[in-house]
Length: 142
Image (cartoon, rainbow, N blue to C red; front, side, top):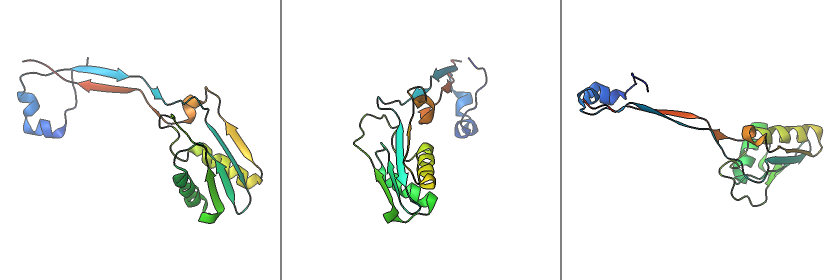
């Protein structure tokens, strides 16, 4: 339990908190939450100096395509993003990720296909996740 808490400015400035008959003081924590689907995280790409094809299990292919075009300066007709149906990814396969950009850049520079398949353990760090959180509340009866 913490004895001093920051209160929202509006409640403090109005004196509402100070005048309250009941005040509660406690802290709650949630553990990190990882969104690891059964399918491993994987990205493949093949490219030339002028065109690129990205194979990514992302549900937002057009967003991935636009992100790559924006970051690389490619024209719309030179970038393709292909994906198979993705279901049950718990929000972790939404759009282009840093690993997608790295694999696509390598394929384009090497002018050869490049593929990355993360291990199950790497899935905990390669995708987005919700970090551990601490939530504090105050409640006291006067």
